[in-house]
Figure 1 (cartoon, protein in one colour):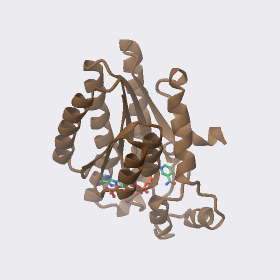
Figure 2 (cartoon, rainbow, N blue to C red):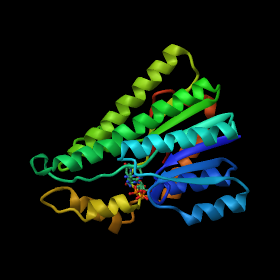
Figure 3 (cartoon, rainbow, N blue to C red):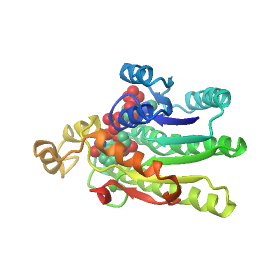
Length: 252
Ligand SMILES: NC(=O)c1ccc[n+]([C@@H]2O[C@H](COP(=O)([O-])OP(=O)(O)OC[C@H]3O[C@@H](n4cnc5c(N)ncnc54)[C@H](OP(=O)(O)O)[C@@H]3O)[C@@H](O)[C@H]2O)c1
């Protein structure tokens, strides 16, 4: 049995990934604050399990409790392959650095960096000690490698996730565990995150007209299409390059 644990399953890319996993017969455990009735129906239709774990990933004690519960449930299912997709993230705060409030910055890093690192560390440890093959994916962004005016938090958090990915992979290669971890840049997609970007001010985000243009000119990709590319990468298990930052743009 194969299981995929995905964060941010209530909408956007996370929902699309959960849907494709369920449709290919893989059981899905989903974390987000809001539930998703569409995934429950898809699971029933495909005769697989979908379990939702409500959790605010910015809250460390909620995260620790949910990890404990997930490990108990996974133990019972005893999978041969375990995927972790760290997808949930926010773009806010969008501001020039002197205007950023401390608590919003702390929330951003807890959600975009600390929670994915804790989940990856814990689930990798769990999988290795239970002899389960583990493939971890951190969803990143092109912003990890390009400074964007107003996006200091997001550029820095995604750069952190890329370096974390490379470091974990280096350790796994040295330890000869066979466990793999990659990052995946999904490119620009038509989701709530893009709505948030378009609703910022030109003063906070000087590239706003370019991003409004992406929507107007239908350049934002559909999440199902992007999710399909990541699933194809994961299905070709032997070819997955440990520590690689995959970029969706290489597949178009
Ligand atoms: N959209 C783009 O153009 C784009 C481009 C490059 C990279 N990305 C990356 O792709 C990934 C998915 O983005 P998206 O566009 O699909 O985002 P989205 O539509 O805004 O969805 C974000 C997901 O994260 C969850 N989430 C947010 N805050 C949370 C919290 N505190 N606790 C638990 N879950 C939380 C949300 O669920 P709840 O609100 O129900 O909790 C939701 O399911 C992100 O890592 C993003 O950085 C997106």
